[in-house]
Every structure is written in structure tokens, then in C-alpha cells.
Image (cartoon, rainbow, N blue to C red; front, top):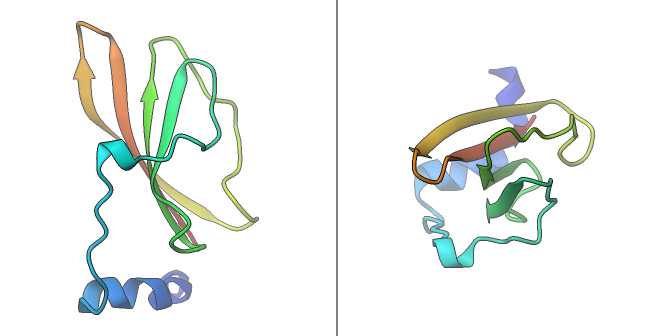
Length: 101
């Protein structure tokens, strides 16, 4: 619980409903994020908080990303969850969320 304390300032308005829900449509995804050959990364919720971000990553088969760091030094909690696998195009679609605590 103590690790979530720094996030409270950003999370309380979301939970309490005092700020509007943020929806990022596919046409509005930000492709100016860091890229790796064979992968496409697009920011969904970025630059809203220095502690929260969400992006979409599309990985082509047989590709890998080098170890890298997101943002300022600190602990990063990530969740990498496959959303869809397309057998015909052989692409993996991932949703990437990170919380800086």
C-alpha cells in the first residue's frame, strides 16, 4: 500500500469521478514514441502524469526489444497482456501499461 501513495494524487480524480474519462481512439494514438525495428509502439495515455502511462505495442514475429528504461529512474511496474493474435498476418498486439512508483 505504501508504494501506491505517490500515485494517489493522480488516481483519486479518476476513482472519484472528478475528472472526465480519458478515451484515446486508434486514430489519435501517438506514434512519436521510441521505436524498435520490427515493433510499432503508439502512446495511448501519455504526458498526462509523470507516474502513469499506457501505450499499444505491435510486435512482428521473431522480434525482440532490448532492455530499456522508461522515464526517470525509479521502480516501474509493467503489465504486458496480449490482446489479439492474428494467424493470417502473424502479428501480436499488446497493451502496455506502466506505473512509476
